Length: 479
Ligand code: NAD
Image (cartoon, rainbow, N blue to C red; front, side, top):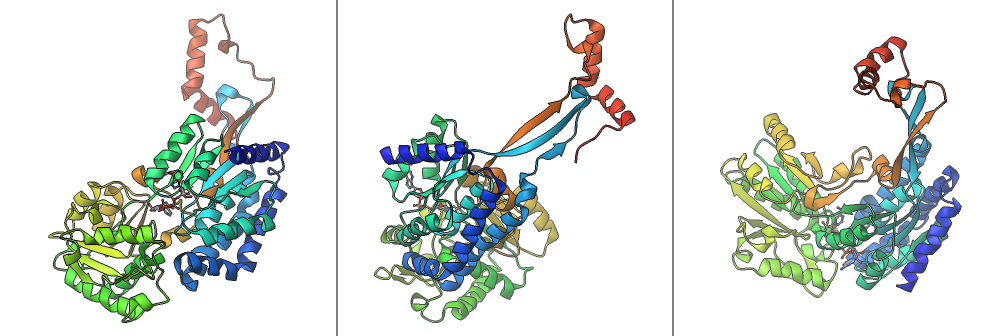
């Protein structure tokens, strides 16, 4: 508790000295992070392997390369993002210049999760530093090798006076949450999300909550089945063996198409992971025995185990679970009520594909919703009728690689978003600035009030008069 208080105070002092505001300081931090991701790639891969047996390809492509590309994108755009944005001036304030200035929030707390322990830590840090904040990062204790690597590396590659890594679990996070921050950025489950939001409310601290949920995937018979099966398998088992917030959690398809889909998924999985998936080096393990037992309990439920149509092998010693497909598990079973966050993929069948809407909308709003279909009417309806953090048609997961798209949830899957400029915005305050001279006094504005004055001012404020004069005089309308 004392430590948390003194870290927060120390960083606030640094922030108030103005150290973090300069564009050069921000760019130097981003270059430092880029250098760290480049020079320490091997160490990072080793840590991710120690924590999750994450295959090197996934470690590089799903974490380290994304960190590098976020740094490069921020470096390329930093000056543009920092530049005050001119906006239209109105007659009411004539003459004046109006602009929006992005200012750093101050000292921010970033709490990250274990499944992508590098990316989920450093991607928000990139946004926070680009926006000119001082940062405390609390990586997940569930990925201890990556957490201690971050604690060792960050002070070597970025300004340790303004960026601190605090390792630890619930007591340390609780102590941090008691301090006053200017923003809390939390990634993890929604139960802890509620704890974070409650703690933030005490200080009126704004939050970004990057949460999870059950991401649905709908597939109809119009697809290229071979391509679809590969993309589904890549998004489920090729992303940390299902331990990913945007992994497809369950599939909805028609009962006539399900057998073909299952056959194709089996073929693809055979090619990806061979006859002995538990022995495959290309499949992550389950992070720890708590999560292994949680998953085992989902499978042990009556009426669930017997629905396995593929896979099901588990090795408690190695913490490995094979890709597993289940067909028509009961909708009220725990596996269909809770976020699976592991290698089980239930397929729910319906008579008509349109029944997917009722089913999805009866559940909490997901972080991602997927549709595989060539039917443009179905695509349109999916986009209009399903509320989700993000949506991807005919692929899985890779929407998060586009920095021009915001990444975040809605409802139970989270609040706020980041990636690309959205990260910069998440850690900035957009300050409204209006600059007037002393010319342009409108007598009608001041007492003593009268009906004619009121009429003039109403005309100005309600826009009609203003718009006419503005059009006539050609006032600047901002960019
Ligand atoms: P986790 O166990 O690593 O917890 C996340 C963070 O919360 C950790 O830093 C941990 O120390 C802290 N924490 C845990 N319990 C706490 C408590 N009682 N009080 C204060 N802090 C506490 O990760 P997790 O929650 O198991 O992560 C998995 C969940 O996160 C899933 O629901 C997943 O969908 C979601 N997730 C979301 C995203 C996203 O970007 N939206 C990304 C990854 C994971």
